[in-house]
Image (tube, rainbow, N blue to C red):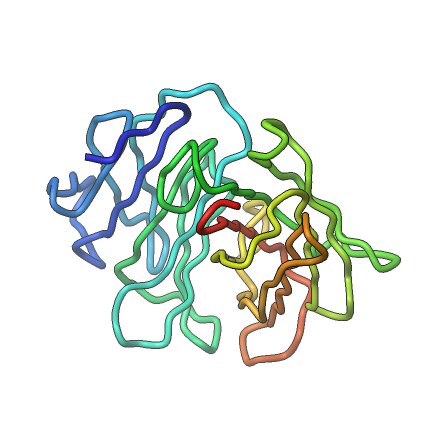
Length: 230
C-alpha cells in the first residue's frame, strides 16, 4: 500500500455517469491515504460533487480531473475545497460522464511526499495582464508556498517557471478550473511542453481554449513532478 508520510493523497474513478442519489464508490475504484470512503452525486446534467476524508493541515492542493470514456468530453474541477466537477462536450454543452480525480496535499502526482521534487498551483489566466499571470502554488523544494512565476505569452498562452525542479525527467498535468459559481465553464487547457531551464528550474508551457477551439484566457491548474530526483 502507498505510504504518505505527510499530507494526503487520493485517487478515484467514478463507476456511473448518472448515479441515483449519493453513491459510495467500491474499494476497487478509490484510494485515500487518510482512509475512509469516497462518495459522489449528480447535481444536474454534467455536474457532480464528491466527498472524501480530509485529514491534513491545509496547503495548496493538487486537484486534477479527466473524463473517462471514448467520447470527446472535457471535465474541470472547481476550487478544490468545494469538490465540484463539471463535464461538457466539445461544443460546451453539459453532458453526463464518468470521470477520474487525482487529489493531493504536499505530495507529488503519485502520492509521494519524499523523493522526487514537485510543485502544484494555479494560474489565474482570466486576470492575465502586462505579460504576467498571477497564481498560487506549493513547492516541495521550498517546503512552503511560492516557487512559481507565470508569464502571459499571448491569449490563452502561458509559461510557468518552477523553482528548484530542473531535472532531465519529469511529468506535468494541467486542467482548466472554475474560480466561482457565477458562470459555467467556458473552455479547456492543454500542455504544450515542459523542459529544464538552466540547471535548477523547470518551464511548463500551457495553452487554453474556449469551446470550439478559439484561444482564450482561462484559469489553469498545473502540477509538475520530477522523476527521478536529481
